[in-house]
Image (tube, rainbow, N blue to C red):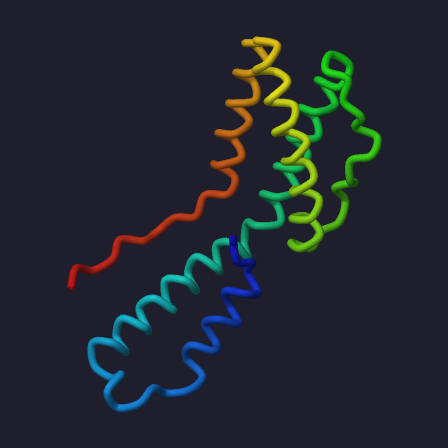
Amino acid sequence: MTPSLPDILVGNFMCMADPGPPEQQGEFMAGKVGLVALLSLLAAQEAERGVAARVEENALIRAMLDEAAADHGLDVAGLPATDALTISALDGGNAVLRKALIGLHEAVEARDDTARHHAILRLYVKMAELRRLDLPPLPAR
């Protein structure tokens, strides 16, 4: 399961809303605060770049599928539109597009279409770059 940005933020809230019992203070509490802080930092990056990354990723996948439709007999007419701008709507469309991309990749491998296989691998790299979140240097304990 990949938690959504709202899930992470609600989890942070729930984690910090109630102070723990005395036996959970000290190092345990320091670790808990550090983890919530790190998740908040990653959530901030996702809030800043998440929609743009999903819009671009969906467009790139759609373009790959459109380009390969004739060669591989894909029905791209039924694929979802990518014009919604909420993370949940974009993720819903992305799931359908990714499933179609996986199907295309399987067909490409079965046909031994090396050029398109490499194009799909380059697309995977671009997708990973778009979704990358950066961890800060953390102090040693």
